[in-house]
Length: 71
Image 1 (cartoon, rainbow, N blue to C red):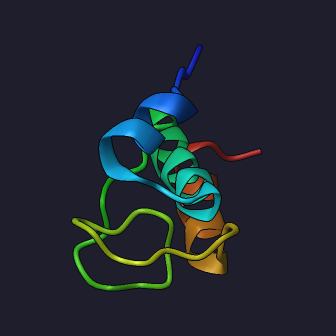
Image 2: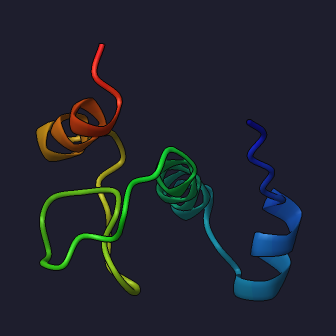
């Protein structure tokens, strides 16, 4: 699987900061491993819409990944 994101396009179109680009990348990578948007404002990298998201995976996110991809 390949996930491609272009930092320069996000900066040019939306003036994203480096921090926001990292958060957006985590969110899009979440989609690539079949994570869905969360319905409520959980502390997650997968919120619906434009909300602040944590800068690293949370226990909620780890639990969701483990449900879909058990080790």
